[in-house]
Every structure is written in structure tokens, then in C-alpha cells.
Image 1 (tube, rainbow, N blue to C red):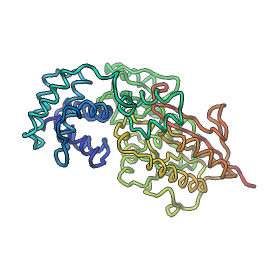
Image 2 (image 1 turned 90 degrees about the horizontal axis):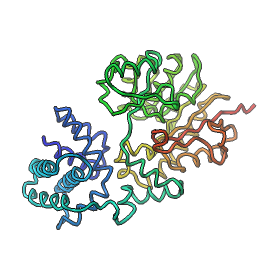
Image 3 (image 1 turned 45 degrees about the horizontal axis):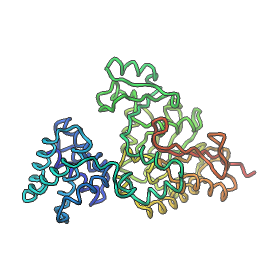
Image 4 (image 1 turned 135 degrees about the horizontal axis):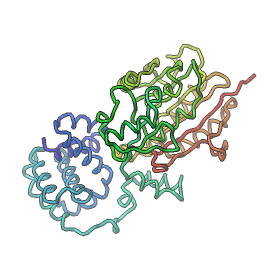
Length: 431
């Protein structure tokens, strides 16, 4: 099938049906045999969602009658064509002709002339980048999110939006039980794959160019995992020690689960829970590939019906969140989230946090984590918890923390990391 037609269907499924880009893209790539076509499909899908308002702004004046209903996929195809013209090195003639050809595979033969005319018009237009009509178009983010970031980060909101629209780097986490970071870097060099280390993560390597993981040395042997540097911080903030009884809450897909176990030489008595049984399969697959052990349970973290009553020495709560810190990896988040979602998520986070706190032993440690940058999910959440929970004490990660401004907020792009938040709490002994 024509790659542009596949990309239009992916965008249609995300915007019109609410499907995640990850799921829609994976299904579409399965229909393609050529690795280059799969790569181009990802480029077009990610790019169109990343710059959606700008592409729409260019398209709409050129379309006399809006495409609706089942023809809406042809509107998405036009956006795919404009993205090629404005953001890729694909020759303009090829971008136009292949996009027009794709319309025929989408039952849009009657619209092929119109699509051709729209794209030819766009091709002749001057650069519009300095004359966008509104912040939502200029920054390619929904208005509610722009306002939220302006409120939370009056000095940094523009930098956050800019970082969100960048392509995400590819970080690896070296499995120290099987390889050293320096040793695996040499393995990559021998395979002519450039990578650099960082002072911000002893297990981390940053690839010069994103690469198919199956092409990297030692994938099947479990020498490494793909994990952003921000997510790699969790294992270094959690307690270490053989035979600690620990719990990973909302564990899927298991990156932090595995890293915590790696950092303790697979000696933790670990339980990993998640409400989604399908996503827990990824946890089990990752544990198996990386040669690690954990008890994996399908469980609702807002209840205790699954719990055997024995408390844990340490808990990692990777709370369900808006994922506004990882938009550069998942641009569909901008269009699938709403302000109402944030309020509902914050309520759920508080419920889960209060529930799992009772599972923690006195003197135990709980690490609260999200991949969000919104204060209502992070600092405000933890500040409220500290005020209401008499046996909770903040263990600062950075010296400038306080109960009123707790935790470590990483913003997108800082040291090439995703946006992430961590707060470390200790349970006091009431006696």
C-alpha cells in the first residue's frame, strides 16, 4: 500500500477515533514489508501530528469545501502532503505525485485533482513561519496546554513548547549485570554506531542517531534497554540492598522495574503491578530478555484486594499522568488530552498515592514519579499529601526542596532528557 495512504489512515485514526499513535502506527507498519517504507511512515505520521495546527492553517484557505465524514481521511492526506513540502527533503514533485496517487487508494479518485491543486498552491507559497495567526498555531500546541504551561512556568513556557516539538533522542540503558557502560560503548563503536556517555546517568549512552534496536549489538542477549535518561534516574533514587521487599506500582512497560532490579544485581524481592494485563506482557518480556526476576500481577493500585497484607520496604509509584513531559516522543498527546483529563488524573494520582502508602513499612521509602510537567500532578500533589499525611516526610533529592515546593522537576530538553518529576518520601514510625 502507498506509504502516504497509510500515514493518512494513521492520522485519521488518532484524530477522529482517539487511537494512540503508537498503536495506529504499529498496525500500519505491519502492512509494509520494506524497512524504508516503515521508516517513512513513522516520519510522516509523527511529523504531521507534531505540526498539525500549522499544516491545517496552510491547508484550510486552499480547500473550498471542507472534507467531512469518510472523506476526512483525504484531509489528513493533504496534511501529509504539506508536511513533506515544508519539513522534509523529499523532492516536491515526488511529494505531490505520490500523495495524489495515495488518494486513489483511499477511495478519493474524484478528489485527486483538488488535492493536486492544493499541494501545488502550497508549494508556490512563501514561508509562513513568521506570520502565524495565533499561539496555538505558532507553537503547535492546544490552547489549554499553552495556558497551563504559562501559569506554571512564566519564564520557561516557550522553551518547553519548543522542546516538545523537537525530535526525541535515543538513550540506551546498559544492563550492568551483563555489560559495563564503557564496554558496551566499545561494542557500538565496533559496529560503527556512535554513542556518548553522560555524567547524569552511569548506565546511559546517547546514540548519535536513532537506530533500529534489533541492529544494536546484544539486543537478544539483554545487554541494554532503550530508556530515556530522565526515566533512568528512578533506580538511582530508590533504596538498594539484597532481599529488600519492593513494589513497583503501575509498572508497565517495565523499564524502571528492570533497571531497579539491575541496580541490585537481581536480588530484590520485587512485585510489579499494573491494571492493564496486556501491557504487563511487555513487563514480562523485558524481564525475560534482560535476565531478571519479578512477580508480575494484574492489579488495581487504587485498591488493596490483591495485597497479601505484608508491607514493603520500598515502593516506586510511577503514577498514571498526562504524559505532558514526553510530547516529543508522543505528539498525539497534544491532541488526545484535554484539561478535564488532567483534573481526573490528578484525582486518581492522589487516590493511588494514599492507597499504596499503607502498603509501605515504617521507615520505608516511596518514590513518586510522573512523566508530566504540570504542577497539579507533581508538586501540588506531593505538597497536599505531605500536609494531610502526618507520617510522611520529604527526603530531598535536591537541597532547595521544601514541603511547599517538593520534588525534582526535569523539563523537556534539559540535558537532552524528557520531562519528568520525582519526589522521595519516607514513612515515619508513629511510635
